[in-house]
Amino acid sequence: MSAERLGRQDLHCHTNMSDGDLTLERVVARARELGVEVGIADHVSSRNTERFVSSEARVRAYLDALEDAPVFRSGEFCWCDEMWKELPAEVMDRFDYRVGSNHGFYLPDGTMGSPWWQELPEPWSGRPQEVMDVMVDNLCEMVRTMPIQIAAHSTLTPPALFGLENDVDAWWTDEREDRYIEALEESGVALEISNRYRLPHDRLLWKALRAGVRFSLGSDGHTQGQVAQLGWAAETARRVGITDRELFAPERRRGGSSQR
Image (cartoon, rainbow, N blue to C red; front, top):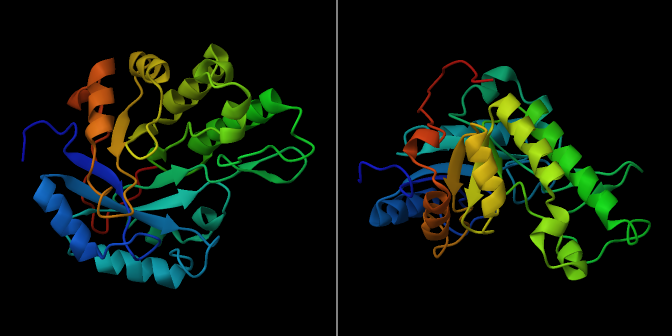
């Protein structure tokens, strides 16, 4: 294992305990082959009761399964699902760290927006900038509210917006970047550099680095070809000046107290 952690620590991997293709044993073996330390962050959410870790009993069994594995124990909690509010503190305390992600964001009319929208539905089709503002508001609230240590693929932006204007600066304006970076800095939540989604963009990372935000690298790997693959994420981190000093440093905790 290299003395440098950057590019050698993947804190966002999935197994077939949620929607990944690989068993825990195969993820561990693949990571070992690539010389990468991994954190297992399967989906902990009631949004998909068949594929996700979707109940307290299943969370306990999931954590038990990770107990003796040479991995960090984590879980990916969804902002748009309230399971993170419902689990007992003693269960939440068993995670080495927790990941939060925007798989859906709350709209003012009571409906839910999606970062994967291919088209903006009515009544939002003529209000793309408003949709973007609402999504950034949700991201700020997510990192300030959820008991998480990492925000995963958080700048994922609906493809419908890029269909209107294929320039990231049209959507991630200076004001929106600054608002989100301030929330990250105040909350202490680390910003994930996602190898799978090729996010965030350099300007936001550069500004976050200068604001003192911490970072993590994640493959968001679900398949053999994705798990423990951090090439793009590591190259991007180095390009903007991120070093080991700026990385979130998890610790294996077995029965310790909560970090937040």
